Length: 196
Image 1: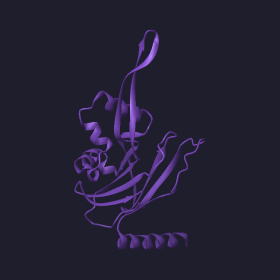
Image 2: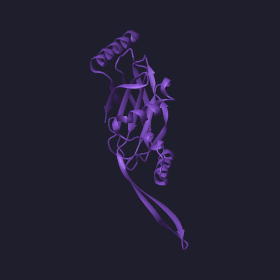
Image 3: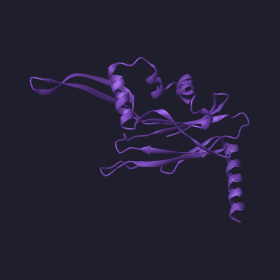
Image 4: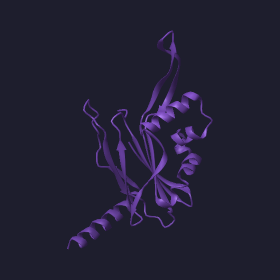
């Protein structure tokens, strides 16, 4: 009986997706970042638009852009002082990408070629010759698990339903985070669905 209900629900969900296209959602619409916030895990899930040409999917999570002030300290006359500083404008505050198993190795290249709808991503920054300030920002972001240049696996069920678990560390920047799912055919993006 449970199996029959599950099959009926999956058929209903499939028909809704076929009518509307790709759907993306999360288990938490709002994550309260308060003084006691210690980080959390958010489940991103959804359904791909049924298409016989689809070869895989990519999912990205991007945090709000920030202006970051970076400083270099040096010991001067026995004291540590700021001797240089640089401000990075519209730097990414958070970025993570997920890909279906067949696209794990080529995901970064696909996202770089398609430029994520014209917006800069961590992959764009990592491919350019970096200034010492950009390199320091990227390294710090990677160490704090905020800017991830590695691609995590996107779990797919029945070639239609997907889910990804996103770990948000305690020092995430408050704001709107964009979740985008890219559906691919022959390593080219053919469909995009975005949610903030």
